[in-house]
Length: 379
Ligand SMILES: Cc1cc2nc3c(=O)[nH]c(=O)nc-3n(C[C@H](O)[C@H](O)[C@H](O)COP(=O)(O)OP(=O)(O)OC[C@H]3O[C@@H](n4cnc5c(N)ncnc54)[C@H](O)[C@@H]3O)c2cc1C
Image (cartoon, rainbow, N blue to C red):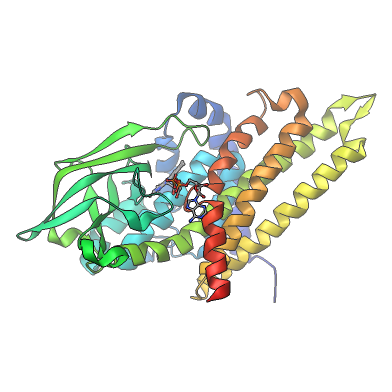
């Protein structure tokens, strides 16, 4: 067992960190306050190869692995969770699903556009009445000649309004439960397909989260993604990868909150000494760093296993559960260390405190991660 990054991996970390510090940090609060999707940042990330991280070169991707992917999401999220969330949803959900389940024709058509960032991808599983119980999907797709006609509505779709293409899930055979749900590729501008309400969120406010409405939305048969009735099963496999990226998102934000707390505790003076001299503050910092390191090990373990082609259902859920809960705890301690200044928007920990909460909810809540882990333990 060796815990060491390669030179190439270290260089990716430096590149992404420099980009995040110079291009993203100056605008973080502007994006957040305006709830504005940072399209220019996504465009640049696409040009740098970070929107097709896991995609082979023949489809325009960077042909890297999950370790490099985690490094990228971690470094972006250390500065802005909204950007980290967008890059994660684009890479491992939409793009990853088309790569994993797509036909050669679908891969050639969509992956170069997505991997270059010319198109932004969305992945739309959740519905108003089917969240944790995603197999309770109500949207339907009915065959009509060579086409499929989709009806229904989706909620909480990352890039639901800014996305150029979405992978959506609909029931194609009601009697077959989760084996009767199929996935479809739907392009923006398709008649009967539109974004609904854009959510006004607690955190990750620059990330676009919207409803999707499908009203007699007709797509060609060639847009069925994966086998008929295999959409839900494929989705669960996609989430095994996606959860590693949410763990990385949590990890990055927790590290960002710790870095800010370390700097502030050295500068801020009370009782004629820096607050870092107080044992109470030191213990917070020590616990924050220890938990983050444990989250990092779980996350990279899952990434390494994924790169080796091993099944990571349990490890991805463990990483996401632990990193997500850790990020919430760390951000809370960070606000405490900042005192009143942690409660205002002039310092970064206020935003981390809001943004981290997504990590215990998106791509399966903490309760659902425990359910997944327990099922793996007991099977
Ligand atoms: C910012 C954001 C971005 C998102 N992006 C996407 C996206 O791109 N695509 C997409 O498809 N979805 C997306 N989601 C949806 C997300 O995956 C769901 O919100 C999540 O799975 C929970 O579903 P729910 O909100 O319906 O909560 P519910 O399922 O209603 O859960 C409510 C509570 O009940 C608990 N609960 C439910 N079932 C059980 C159980 N069996 N045992 C114990 N507790 C249980 C939950 O843990 C939770 O605490 C996003 C959500 C957010 C907030």
